[in-house]
Picture: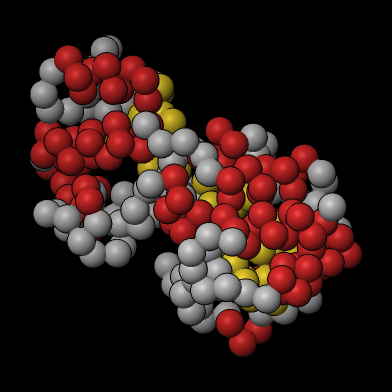
Length: 256
Ligand SMILES: [Zn+2]
């Protein structure tokens, strides 16, 4: 086990048992699953990139519309920083659970694409992802590699080659609605789930925070793998409070 509050191994064994006995398990992840990859939770103050700027202020749809160059001066750094990161063992365990047919998919609040890069196939990104940027005029989509080239070549907002309009990252900015299709998929998975495993999320950001409630109302069970408290702690069947990597590796080991 690595650092963190240690959880008795029987909790990991209990979650392994729940996984074995469930038929429609789903995973919900938040920023905590990517922290071991070196991606700070931007809601924690004083962390790296976000230290001198209020993301609620700059990563806002109004700033993108009115001052695209200022928006991209900030967001371009975030793109480059996220693109450098690699999936960690927590992402890999979750991909392995899907390969084994033990979970149906992952609903994530993260935009870093690390679940896909770790091998998860059914990933519902309810806050979008950095994988593509979109032209607001012609709706053409530009891959992140090209966006990074454009950012490196010229200061300011990267533009659509055809329309000369500033591209918008395909992520949900502050002040924007969540993508309807992704949210509908997430709600359907949550309603059908007989087990939801919440990993690395404080479950406080709505509307994603309501998904565990959807599973509970449908008679499903809840497991929590998160260091901090959540509003669902009293209703969880099992809670793993240690380091997210160590806990998920213990669950995988308990399955073997
Ligand atoms: Zn265009």
